[in-house]
Image 1 (cartoon, rainbow, N blue to C red):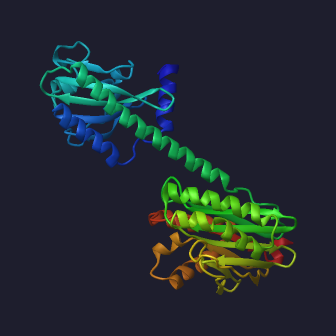
Image 2: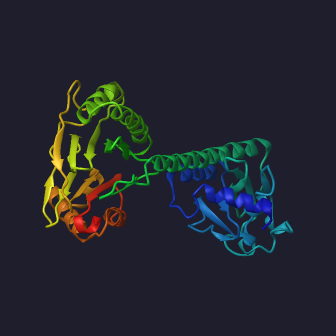
Image 3: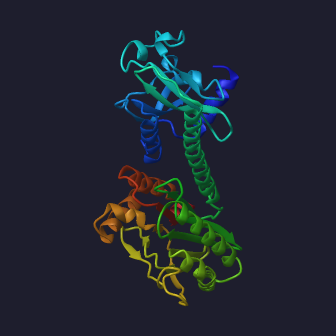
Length: 392
């Protein structure tokens, strides 16, 4: 593999599409291509370093994956325009190919290269048939246009993947230095982009925490989440905890009404010296403190989610996080795995009791969600106040 091909393969891998399940948006194109051109088979093939992998096909009965040295499409990606083989049995490049001399006995092949967003030719939209034939100029233009549809889908997926990476990067990953406390969190979206987020940062000598869940999933929820996160971040720097949420609720009310959505928010401010937690729970309802003996107490609600009731205000509450106690805040994605909230709390309490650190507890909760299949975004934030013996 030369340097040019290596760059092409890198571009293919950057699309994160290899070995992914079938998708209707690609299947639709190959079905239409088969019908328009009247051929036995049509496929979207991607050419890796040493193999051809089929993302979508019709008429191949699930076949299509093969070694690269058996691939017609490896010749197609070497040129900017379509490759048309009228009769493979008469073409020196293909007459001994196992797919020509054996099943599916290909005689006609036409493939148009597919380009990655950077212009690298990473695969083809191709047609095959056991009967020799040709494509006229009009048909070649149609094939090129349909290949463009596939390219746009590949580019869109690449942009979504990149947006997901940026969304994750915007969330904090390094906990602030807070002697006597451990802090960890993870947000796992059900799709590439999610509507959950968490945030934390120091305000003078206090620790500000946010966990929020936008109704819905995917790109629309992610856009709303980004806006709410920015407003929360700004408002908390100049207001006390209660005023922060009330100002945020007012600021995002019209946006949430216009988008017909709402956001649950748990926002808290910790005074590390005393362990006092001042918090507002706007419709979230999934914050709990576990004590050293396996007991738990749920934090009370301050009112409905942001955007649910116009003009409402929220009040703040206080809790004491005693040495050895753990504050856990999750999003409702975790509730999908349990028949009710008490069952979920029991499982979380067991995990909290047997986890040595905040990071371990987050890792175990996330692993549980992943193992049981993500139907919704799942976020867990853990703030643990170390027992005196641990801190000494």
